[in-house]
Each structure stands twice: as structure tokens, then as C-alpha cells.
Image (tube, rainbow, N blue to C red):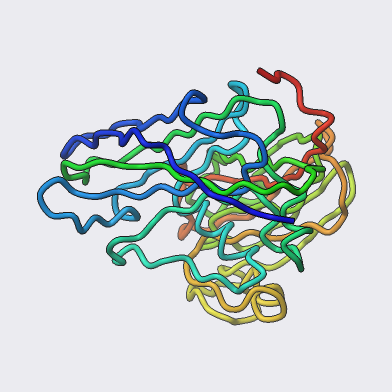
Length: 289
């Protein structure tokens, strides 16, 4: 198995102090065998540029269909929670950071197993980065890695608002469906008293949250949603957005697939997003172009 890399030679202009969407289209990007995209930014006047301070949301489209659409914090939590190398998400204060968008199985034991998951073969690629208004004038380039490993899956990492209240509310539900194999569900854990997830009618987990029985601290106490996974599999993670792995290896049938939570007044409210991560057999991809 071999990997190679390349980059889009046309830098995208970054305007100062405005929300904008930087877009790289299929005419600029390889799509066959892509296992990772990387975004690097540089300032026009002062080259030092903090990517993590200005990225709001990241999207990847395959033949026009979203396969990745998450805020920066969710992407970092996913990368930190799944990396087999115990990757720790870069601190937002880190300068000269490069934003990495993994598309392979980053928790696989070998490079060959990891690269069995990649961008959908035969589909045109598009990458979008939505910035905050904290930008300074500069430019951005996109690079990628490709693998000659035969693909079996492509990833789908999507998130949207849970619409849960920042209140002492019980049984708030986020319904979703997924025809791929659901591997994890992610959500903001601060202010969560209890969380329960069902995949196609089968319970994936029912666990206490950070706010369980009135606890407020984010730490490794019995109410932390990810204590077991953090210590045994990923190493300690920093932050209040966590991914909880689901080991049922099932698709998520509509009507019987959901995340339910009891929130407290410490929950973030309407801005909290639930993310779903799945791997999908490549033969089921539709919309190649």
C-alpha cells in the first residue's frame, strides 16, 4: 500500500474581519483515494496565522452530497476521540496550526485498515471552510493525501442543532437515521445529567452525565460521560464536546434511532449540536458525478 500527497495551487483569498466561505471545487481537487484534506492559512502582512481561531464550520461534499458538515469543535472532538495515536486536539491559542479533515478510519490498527475508508470513489469533491469574523487579510491553500488502498467505506460525519433547552428538562430527544454503520454519537456533555442512545431499537448506551446528581465540574468523576473510553482507549480529552462510541455495528433505522438526554441549567442550549459518525459501504453511494 502506498500514499501520496498534493495541493490546490490556487490560494483562496481571505478577507479581513468578515464571515466568509472558502470553497475548493472538483476542478481543483483530486478525489480518487483521498483519505485526508488539510487547510493552511497565512496572513498577507504577518504570515503567522491561527487557523483554529478563525474556522467556524467545515464541510465536504461528494457529488454535491454532504458527507461531512460540522463545527470546528466537533471536528476536533472527533479527531481526538478516535485517533489511534491518542491525538490531542490543538489548543485554540496555537499559532500556525493546520486544520486536518480526516476521511479514513483514524482508529484503525494499521494504515491498510485505516485507508479502507476514504472519499467516495468516482464522486467529485468539494471542500468548504466557513470562517468567523476574526479573520485577517491573507490566503488559504488546500492539500490532501491519497491512498491506493481499495476502498470499502466512506465516512459520514454530520451534526445539527439538538434543540435542547438549557433547563432542568428530562427526556429531550434528538431523532436521526443513518443507512451506514453508526459508530458514534457526539454531543456537548456540560450540563447533561443523563444520556441514552438507541440504534434501530437497540440500546447503545445509558450513562450518567457530567451534571449527574448535581455535579458541575468537567473532570474524571463517576458522572463523566467518557471516563471509560478516555482512559482505556483514547487517553484523556480536553473540552466539553465528546463522542461516545456505539458498538452495535448497526444502521440507524428511522423512528427507532435517537439520542435522549436529561439536561440541567448548565447545558449550552440551542447552540448545542448532536453529531453522528457512520461508515457507509461504497457500493451504496448514489449521485456519482
